[in-house]
Image (cartoon, rainbow, N blue to C red; front, top):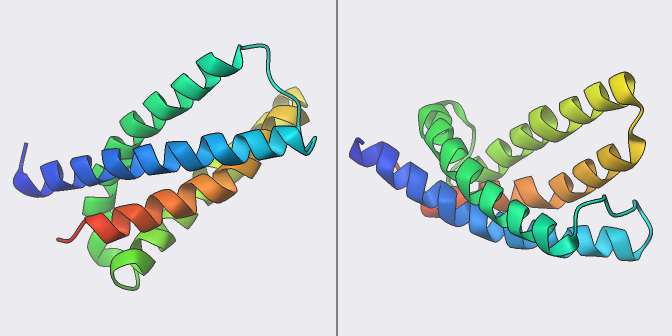
Length: 133
């Protein structure tokens, strides 16, 4: 693995841990205020899955970030924030609309977008703070 990719993958994994923690916190807030209902999977399994997946996808998105780094506007944290907002738009909002129109599972989409609103900007900001080309 090239040094630049390695730095980006590590920064992405660390940002994934932070983003995962934020996702769990705001996921619990969304549930507690009745924004959406919990799924059929036990909460401990959901929390573990969120943390593990945000680390894995954080590393993947970190590698992608290193490739897009020069084309993103801003510097440092702002550059990462823009990347995080792109992830929110592509991953959660586009996917959410697809799910609503194909399955009508609005509960899942509300939860996914709610969590993504907090997860991706935080993930991107941490990634932007940690990764320098």
